[in-house]
Length: 158
Image (cartoon, rainbow, N blue to C red; front, side):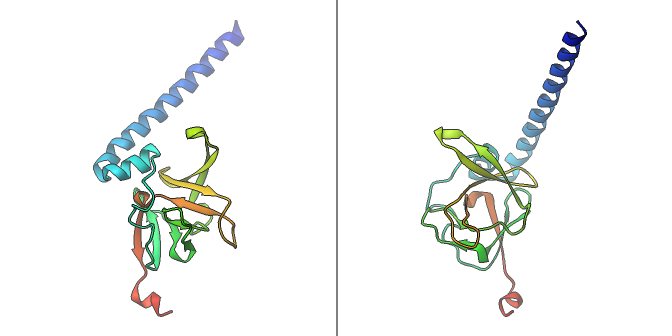
């Protein structure tokens, strides 16, 4: 009987924690709905994907830093951006270790690695092992999940 009660308490505690996490996500999503465009919300908060060759940054060549559209965290430097032919902005590395985090994605009958902003958990895209040197990685990112901070003219002359 003691084990049964202990087990029930553990289940109820886990459900309460899960319910709290779900509630917190719903509250955050409501706040983000007012801040983001429909496409940004779909991509960042619902894990969607924009159509290839349509995003603002897929063919963007300006020097600067790409940041999370939701929280402003620095994610990628333009020096690591390259043309992968995929139709989405592609980078061979994040701006620094810990800027993005990964999660196994089994959706749509595929096995992929999802990339998320490590600060706000917004969906960014996926990372693949078919990128160029030096990392061999291709961070395939939705433009809708990004904002861009151009490099200042002073930095261009350095």
